[in-house]
Length: 288
Length: 288
Image 1 (cartoon, rainbow over the protein chains, first blue to last red):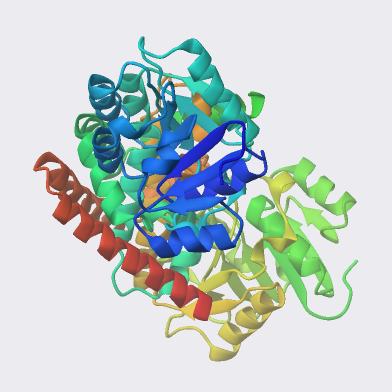
Image 2 (cartoon, rainbow over the protein chains, first blue to last red):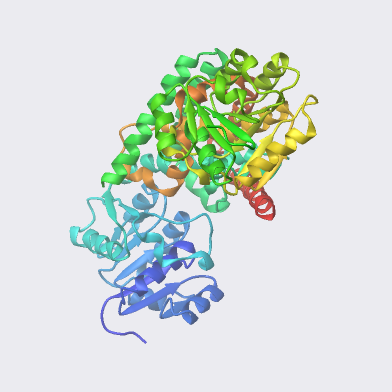
């Protein structure tokens, strides 16, 4: 079954794992295997030619894989690596895709076998759905990818993961410390999701046709989230997201006060600053 | 200069007025005129064939127009109609495009000549730019339009405006009272703009590349707003938008408390409800 050359195992064949499989297939790795608890997903993936073979028991694929890509919820990533520590091939690189980094990196490194290397990563890609049926190899096209290296990582292993994701279509890779990652992601991703969910919470029995206008639709696109995953991500990053929510509340209170006090000049000042910042963000990303 | 048949004047040749002109031109009205304080905009519009003639002095076009479309800021709409009341053609229909309705409708009706009819309207269309150079006849394609009739309006005049905007590509027209309009728009349009502006306010010196990920970009698309217009719209609708901000603050506090108290089951419950509501809104607008 095993062909000579580099072998890769994906653990967790949902939206992200499935998308990894589809994108990796095009790079033609010697062996591309998947591990999942859902036999149906594994069979569907094998029949569609997305993976070479699927396993519910991880022993065989882990024992033969040079690279293992964890695409499970963060808590499961930690327990899976801990429970299967003796199965990994000698010298294997393990990477993950979780939206939080501090605790997974700390806990996995604290128990990791000496010869293994955990290079944590986070693709800034995905969509508002979940499950293999919404997976797509193209979600990585032009996207950014955060790698959160530690002193324990070998530079050649970090480079191997960076080369791999570049091959998937990733346009730029940013290296951040795990702590900085969790801080940045609280503002750039978690806060917009919380805000979108809050906006939707306020809708009652209004004529829904009026809410398809651009501003409302765009502001709430990501409100349809994976509830269980997002509860875990937010609670895992509670200090950072609470700080961002409080900062948001403070900024909202400024606008509210200007309205309450009937101060057009303060509102205009706030909005002018906002426009300038928004331009800066757009220009920054267009330059890159 | 004047050709026989129905004549239309657009007052204010910015993003919305220019877009009206472009879309109306395709309907081939007998005469399509514009009034603006900006001679350059009028000349540019005439040279591009968007209007038949432009005027800085409104007397001639108003005196010969069957329909007048006000595309100025709401405060200017009121003062323009008041100051030029004696210029309007006998029996003319005046409509507007402002994002607030209660005060314009009340004040204009309180001073309007007996033979004139003010049919207030609000296209749920536009983009995040301002000025004639960003105008486009296609902004009305498939959009919704709110008409806020009063007892003073003649049904045939309401129907005339509805026919006109249907001809521009408007997909559905909703009739609401001015008060209901201002209440609905506070939630469906003003709150998302305020929230987008607040989100941007929180961005400092982070690597801007990380903020181009979908969730942040979509949530803040409308943050680049016309500061002066939006200050006027929010202050004019202060009671409704303050109520919506307070409702938003309350809902955000629920999520914040669930994070503070480390309650995944409450977060999941909130997000499950949000997903169901979002589905309902999507389904509602897809059905229509």
